Picture 1 (cartoon, rainbow, N blue to C red):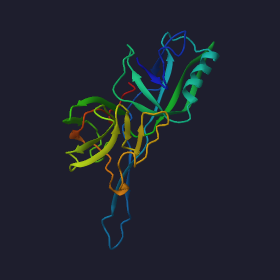
Picture 2: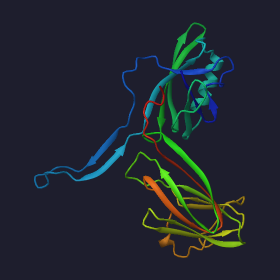
Picture 3: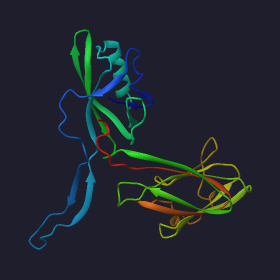
Picture 4: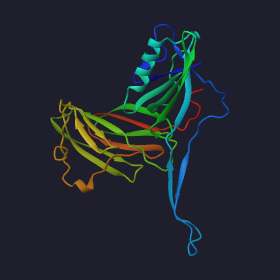
Length: 272
């Protein structure tokens, strides 16, 4: 049996009397995969083949349950603890499934518990079923690596995304220690040799959220302007992005650069 960590707390210790384990009150005939909606136009007399506009995923929803590992009844007070834990967050939180030893199982879910259904028994509750709605159609995996570059160097990253027709946008943290102000450039050889060049300050972390196109620095306010970065032409800014498979980045400058990103991981059955 397994459990999960949600919003920083675990099924192993959310209750002091016994850990909780995943279960189901119904037989399992299948495992949730992925659902997509086909977006197409209409066929007409003059257009017998409909225009195709692509597909749209349905968010992954998982119905499963929890009981105490020792099979004892869940008391009313413990029931409130569980409900408080799972149903308080108003925005999506990370959920990681763990095995019997408490080790994380591959893949991170990010979502909310939409509903719970409790089963009464003498002395309290036998357990409950829940509906967890992920904010995407699949879990993700996280990549994070720090590289030290002396003057210039090449970084190779294997982007193991399971979505082969979409880019993955990383978050970059750049720290240079060579001078008070120095220019640092990152060229994505794989992505048509597009380049991002920024002005950095000595020992001040510069953080670039390439997905949301947001730059920040390591000060308390975190506020940074495009002019501070040396970006005069806002219509000619390149935010590094990764293609599925192997990517090559060429970095110029004496820097330490941390690259992190989440990528689609289409593994089904992570709850079993």
